[in-house]
Length: 492
Image (tube, rainbow, N blue to C red; front, side, top):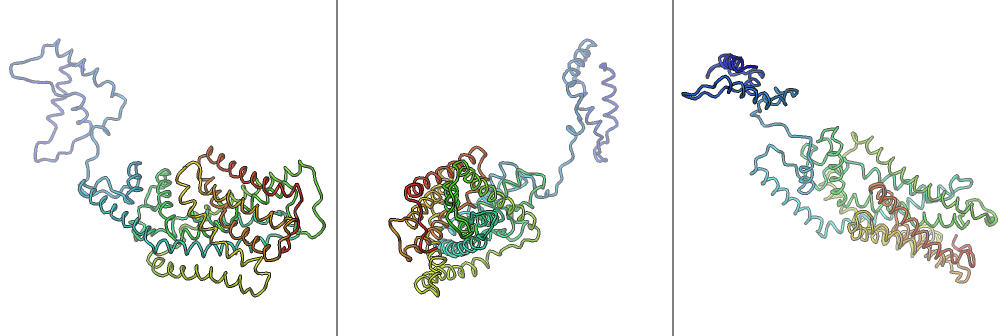
């Protein structure tokens, strides 16, 4: 375009504009033309020569030619900003998610600096109040009571399911397989659920006010939803009822020490069969290795499948899942659990001292007597040690190995030919193995941690747990099995 043609086009555009006071609707092309071909500079007493005008037009063409392929009307003439307050944004940035996770709030971008500071100040105050609630003696008492009650219920569920699934011609001889599957399924449901503990500590009354709920996000924003769910999971893990269900019931329903014990017995050809008859015939060592791998693979795969199935069930029933009201839980349910938890433990003591039938001691009562001790040990050990190494849950690993060592030692004392323990001692050892060791060790939390870690860390953690636990039993139980052999205990 020449200088004169460009100037004439500019004058036409300028003359076609409405004057002040008239309708000022401007077409995008007019804005673009004014942007691309600005008015020539006109100063008094100064006129461009044809040569200068041609050079200036050439420089303008070179400057703006790189925008020739861009949809400039959307860039230069954006939509006018609305004077009304915009709706709450549902797509969150990383910074907003971090602010939400630290302050338990969501500060909209349209809020003024003063309102943002007030919101952050209020939420920090609420966070400090929450920390004071968590550190209060009442919360600690409620947590202990939930762990005691649900550890007893989890132990009863495990013993009952072992009795139901140990029958003649059973496809799987390892009786602890089904408890490990059931506990992992319940834990997967609790971890995935976003409805039951929606009110958390009572800070929010509805999903619209509750910024942690995924329904306040765009459904296609996968990363934001995952971050919000993780934030909610971190909060609900401090609620006594959730701790009782997840750590107390699921952790006591499953047993890592019994799982490793069955793996060693499969390796040493000593896994008990529900069929009555003579002793197990000897077999080739290669078959023993196959039996070991079968127990290891089967337990881990079934438990991991239960965890995934529980999560899928939680997502399926999410629309109809009710919410536990925080005030009712805090004022009524938690105090009731205190009486039920300690009352059940005291009842287990009385049933052990004065049993209706003597056989109850070895089967149930001693296990219920030692179960809360193992559950409390696992909870506080994991609480102290797990945060120290993010890639390796040290607390869960420590209690699983400790419980496995105790179970192997009690198994040797119970099956030793030299000691020949009496009936009462045999019952006590059985109660320690089923109650204390069964509740101190867990498979549900273990597979949940395997599922949550990175792939490399997960393999390291899982392989180390199985290898170290099995090595302990090879040394403890193998020294007796391969030297004297196991004797059938008197209490079985």
